[in-house]
Image (cartoon, rainbow, N blue to C red):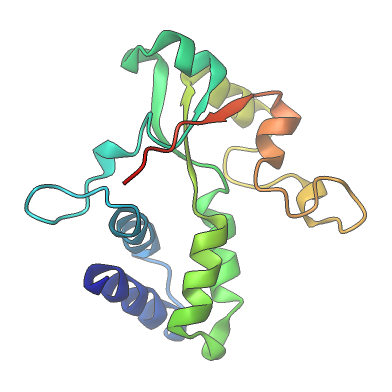
Length: 159
């Protein structure tokens, strides 16, 4: 819990200072600590994420690391950054944790699927439907994948 809290404090400092320079590192490290993806010496270990969270059906068929993107934020990091910055000066450790726990998820997908997301303009943003409260994909974390017709399964390991 100590390391999780340190990463949350780092994020809080970035928000208060209206910076995003180190968000990726702090967000990913928070995720690793929270989910026990750590080395024997207690450091965050991103290499444990692939295959152990969400995996596309196509990637799951191949299991060939040459054909996959190692780490794909299901909700793009730019969207997560925006959600965090929207907290503004009212950001607290708890409000940051709520945002991260809701939006930070990872998938392992093939390079072909990554190209599909890119070709649809969804590499680093969510589709418009995600923001439309009248649409069935409103706030659906998997909206990009549904639009791109990429099926994911949850391979979450018990930690």
